[in-house]
Length: 118
Image (cartoon, rainbow, N blue to C red; front, side, top):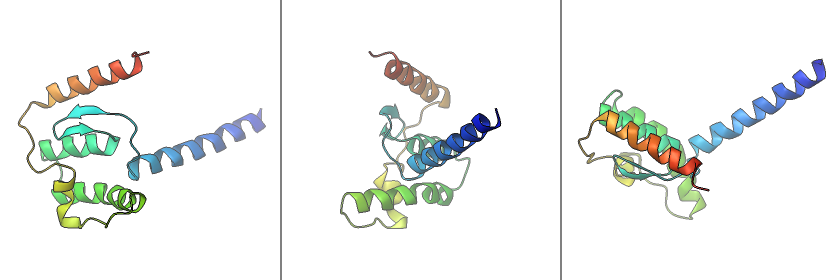
């Protein structure tokens, strides 16, 4: 039994690190409508909610977006975007005024469609 627990712990550790890298480097996992248009990564959804709610300062949102912006620029052989233009790059400057509950409802419906669209 100890051997199976050890393997489960190793697999769990590796899976969580891979998932962390997928999120931080903004690998597209889905497409859902959000306040800034179409969000393709969990970080984009989170950042659009943070900007709209003004819960955290914009500098924190930029810090969340920057590793993925660098990875995308390197992957697409483009220039690395400047830190000051990140919000414009992700279309987070002119957020539509909408209720947070309606955004959450759209996300829930989109995830439901994604899961059951076979």
